[in-house]
Length: 187
Image 1 (cartoon, one colour):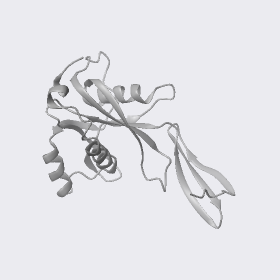
Image 2 (spheres, one colour):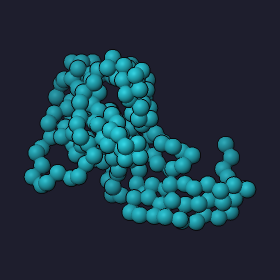
Image 3 (spheres, one colour):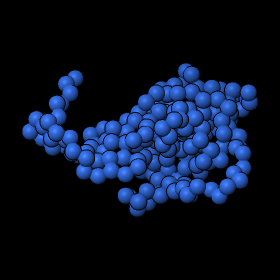
Image 4 (tube, helix red, strand yellow):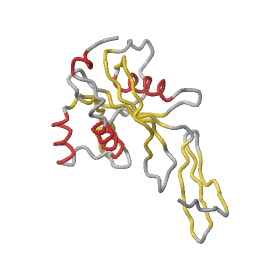
């Protein structure tokens, strides 16, 4: 695979989370969003092997989408700790068992965003927050069976690419996936 040699990289916009750069060279111009911190995505499984999704409002589409719980990793935070925090912040759940399923990328032609995908099980309600809840676009969370998820995909009600990639990756783990009795066991 060949890397393009950039003649010039110019920052055209930036904030605390990302910067937009214009890359010129080799007769082309590209605008790329560089994300400051990587992300995490969580496939949280119930003791019935159901997948937890959150409904979030997405302004670019002016609609709510069903998605895996996800978020950003703080600079001093490990991917696993970020995933644990995001699961709790977005759903109120904590998990006893975690496994990394690797790295995913989103829109690589426009951004360098990388996320670590985790599967989490042994879910229980997390500690109650004593402070005011952080602003979140999450409006509801719900568990879905694989049959329900398949129907949602077929009918166009589950369209988030990060979630679709995560579900495919989970399906590839079938030999590893814990049994229902393992899912309900607490450590």
